[in-house]
Length: 233
Image (tube, rainbow, N blue to C red; front, top):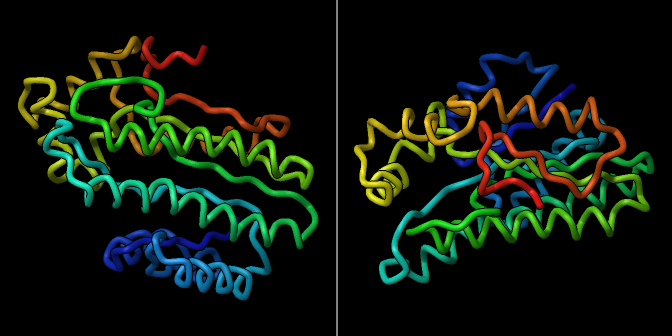
């Protein structure tokens, strides 16, 4: 596959590009909240690699606060990045995939929090639930064009995730009454398999949808070590 990587932070793009040659990947600074930047990124993807067959939306951030401390800015930025960003990416990708005429895949990285309820999580959990329902709506709309739309729901990817480097980790630790440094073990011990979830586990779920499940759309795959509260019913 040939890949176009988008990120707000150029340093992270540079780190990622160390694993690819210029023939394999391009790295573009981009803010998913800005339609013009997204449109330019898709144009560049088509110019460099001839089209777009797969979209993975993994842009994310998180806010963990009780209701009374959650500001309108907290609410807005989560909706803009997670929900509006997903909508804008899907709209751009669908337009290209339809014109190409041979279908495609969209994978959205949502969260176990879109299925379960917990304290100090109203803004983030609501946005993640919206991502999941948008997945179903897009699957229903785009199936006639051969475009499959699915979602991956990780539990806390504590290790190797930028989200867990700041206030989100502190907020979750407060919500559970533990220390920040104890979060990896806490998250591992609360799932049935007693295992921490890592970025590569999420990547494997994306690969499963793309390579192993060609007749699946509108579905979600939990990557959480087994969380009974998030079992899909």
